[in-house]
Every structure is written in structure tokens, then in C-alpha cells.
Length: 228
Image 1: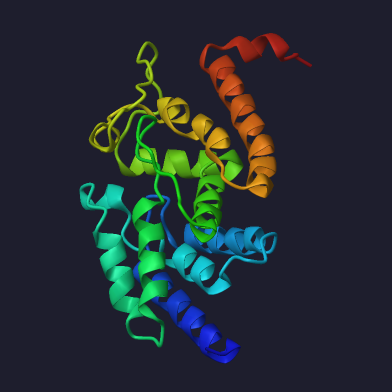
Image 2: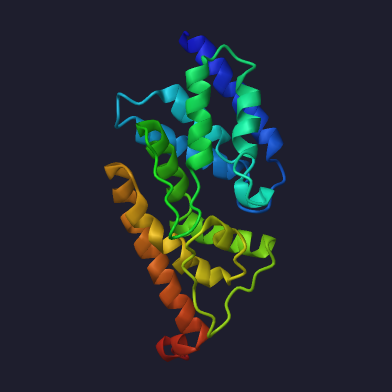
């Protein structure tokens, strides 16, 4: 397959995903896909042996049907992706590889293993996890909490570290607790060294945010204010 054919598949997939996810308000919209796509490309540049076409297509299609938004059904996304990719001159092994990445990509609870077996999968998984932390991650977490009708914060309600995907899916915890149940765990789950370096700074920013949030919630920040 020459570069012109690859570019056509990628551009067609961009259009397909953009139309499919237009209007999403859960934080799994086209712009999330766009950021993961671009980060995946950047990560892949550090690993010459990575199949760039698989990385790009898997990143573009990774949330075509997020399992959390489909009652925990992890088969919907891979099925839609396979149907779309079958329209192009891609060999079955590549399509299967992409679908395996999509199926195993997501975080499903602290006690649930979601390790990737291939470099391409690790790259896309890292890119997706990077978009879940830092400033963007904070914004997406509150967007998803609002989408699910969750309380922003309830004092006394402790985080739960889910041991099964079902527990994680059915969690009704607060948005602030979600930081402890997922976001603050992601730094140590990165696969590639490049992603680990990026994750460090984003993780620290989230910790600073949570400290500031708690100070403002309790009114402690007033002690730092001055009246002119």
C-alpha cells in the first residue's frame, strides 16, 4: 500500500469519526479524538518500528463507541471499527490488530488489567491516558460528571477503588472522587518513556488543583487574601 492510499484511508476516517461524534458532550467528542490522534503520532515518532497506519487508525477509532456509553459493551466499538475499515484495502491482520487495541484500551477500574501486548497499542493507550490528566483531563472529568449527573463533591464520601469493570461502570461517585479512582492512578500506568515524562507534569498539576479546590471549599484560601 502506497502513501497516497494510506492518506486516503486516514482522511476518510477523520471525516467519518468527526461526523459520528459531532455534538458529544461527555468529553469523548471529536476534539478528544483529535488530541489523542496527534499525541499518538508524536509518540510513534520515537519508535521507528511502530506501524504508523495502525497507530493513526486505532487512535482515530478508539472511542467510536466508548464502552461506558454503551452499557459496558466492549464489542460495539471494535465492531463499528471493523465494519468501517473493511471498506478499504487493508489486510485482515491490520484490521484485527486495530480492533484489539480499541477493545483493550480503556481504563476499567483500579483492579482490572488493561495491558497492551503491542507497541502500537501501548502508544495509543498512552495518548488516550494523557488526555485524561492535566488541565484537559480536569476539564473532561467535570464535563463527564455533568453529563452523568454526578455531584461535584460531597464531603465524607470516600473514593472507591473498583476491582471489576462492572463496579467501575456503575459507580455513582463524585467528580472529585474520580480523580482518586482513576486520574491520579494513570501516571504509573503509562507504557512508554516519552509518555511517562509528559504524565509527570500533568499529574503534579492535578495535585495542585485538588489542593486548591479543597482550600477554596473550606474557605482556607481567604487567609491568603488581602483587602486593599
